[in-house]
Image (cartoon, rainbow, N blue to C red):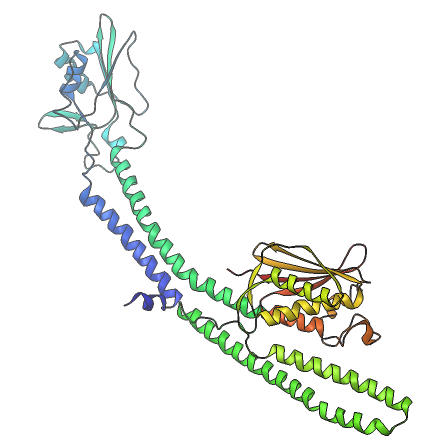
Length: 446
């Protein structure tokens, strides 16, 4: 099975497969420990070695590398047994004989085998004997009385972690470290298509003309991506049909308006001027509607656009027309989009500010991967309840419908539509001290 086929499996089978692989790998590591690592050697002390140590000698640790070394010391009084230690007179007598001392000058305390290992095969024997030799696997204290005091030999305290336990821990750590790349690869392979799907769905929410979601990854994601692409196609067809219908109606209405304007020529001047004024207003509305429809249909090119250069070019054009438009501040800001559409967007915002104020200030800045263009004026501003409604078609800041103070109410609608088609937003906000800020936010080019 190819790598691509594995990624196409449902998430359930992918997770189950990785868990089974992890279990098999962990068990294989444990089996490898059993066969590769040497078994733990038992630590013990023979009775004759204890006697040799008490007599002042030391047994050869190289010959008995599995033995437990005894710690020796001298003290005034006889040693006391530790908890769980016992004394067996026969064993004490055997040690006294080997030291050639009376039993009263010898002490031997040890932990019974049964107390240390309750499931040992010889639970009734306190010590282990082999070929007549007594062997102690448990901690012990042995002592003999000398002129300098009691000479004591005792087993050192057991380490917190035995050598064989350290080896086991090391193997487990190695197996965990070996599993980390597998877990990282699986998590990345599983989350990458999910992240791509989420990003594509987010782009679709802000840009209806965004590319279709790539149908890849587990079966569940491919089904969801296919359903999302079908929904996007149906929505695009639905919006396209309604937009085309509005455009056709607006286009066809121009002919009866032309006939009305022709036939009203013979009417009295007072009537003719009023009717012609209404006809011109309707023509302007139809022209704006057709422009709006043309702007929203079809997918535009997406090329790198320098917003700062575009704003400066528009300012120069407006200055040539005698408008008071200036650039307050600027920063490099490159976005992906249609230059003509973005130019129309910015020009609509500038025209909207000029319609209600004597001057307009523009600024361009960057904020966390977003280019922000602000078109600010010192006009009358807007009521708070109208700041959002102003983006609806045919809603104007001046409700008098006086064309001297603005258009027909499609400029901001067109501006927001273009911004949304580029994955951005346009908002309005009243300025402190009077005026209005039109703020355009567009994602910077990667």
